[in-house]
Image 1 (cartoon, rainbow, N blue to C red):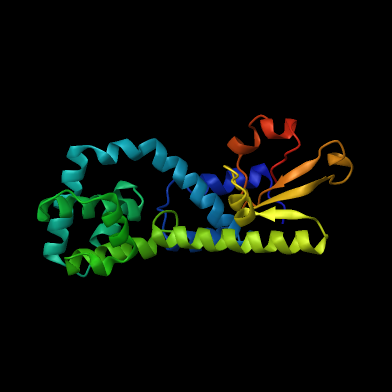
Image 2: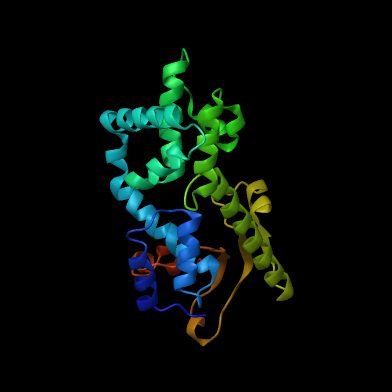
Length: 244
């Protein structure tokens, strides 16, 4: 189904006051039943990421971190099984996975002799069972599984979708008997940039593209938004390369 700019704007406007949780996504699907789940999730994710970029700094001040950490401690002291971190993230309008990272880093700073490395933090977020405190591990887990825009679970889903589209693109190229090189072949040849596929012989795509040789192919899974579509034409279209 074609998504018009007016429809995109209507969906985006509905996202202004909702947290980035799977519950919110289900409500959005009920509001816009004609749109696919993938389309709504893509718009949801992009709009929320823009919001996080605008407000990120205020959540990372020392005062904010200490306030969040103390509220977390008070919350789990009252009821360790309650989704304290998830509710806190929703209350202050911050992504649950990012809130979990903040509190985890603060906890480890307090309980470990040396500051935690980024790789250690990432590993614990991917596998909360590694967190030395069981209550915090459960709180982090709740944030990760309920966040549909950030976190290791979302990263895995995006990777899977990207791989699926790459396979679809490969099958299409084989179906059309087009000669191409894939990422592994490009890497072996020493290319510094490795798109999904490079066509070895440029092709034209219909009358609208008859004057443009397409030598470079790329599969994209995100829904185009106004900021992207209004950018000037890529300099690559001035060469024999066109990204699609």
